[in-house]
Length: 260
Image (cartoon, rainbow, N blue to C red):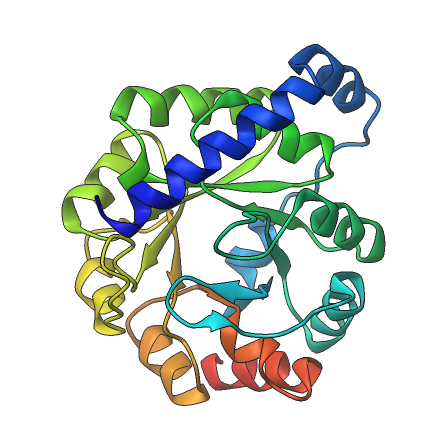
């Protein structure tokens, strides 16, 4: 069993606990009272390079990254630095996140907010929307083609923008077949946790124009930003480099400048 499989198994266990406490009908009542979602796509398409800045406490590969006692305060700094969206990791066991973090960030910023987690059921999409998310992540490697298509359909009914994540050429094609319009290439192999920054460069050419290209993982410096920007990235998703920086507002601004 690879790392991704282990994470998803834990996610399913935690999900069962939450479902026992809150039904899908209860989530639907909450969602019906919410304002419309924020559309991130205009900003992603307009900027020379947009950045999704991530609230990320830890990771399976690096362990603890930052305390982040106040995720809302960090998100405010990201927004001030010029971020186009905020990603909030909500997986508990390996990343130290929670839906409470997402709720806090949603209340603090006007930017679109992404729920970054290992989503394998419709319930998690309803959870994301109920917590105030505007976007959600779907990882091709953790889903069958049928499940990917079904979850994208559910996301559309919830007005959630979906970031579809791929790591291989086959996964890129599967994402496109499912109708992905915001496609992330993860430079990290989620089964082995190995990172290759050139993975985006190798796969970007397979993504047609009109589909927004997102480079994810391994972007730790302005030099790394230039590598993926030169390879065609329109958006970058960055967590570790920002949460470990002493001045996250400046770090976001520097990354954006490097890609422009």
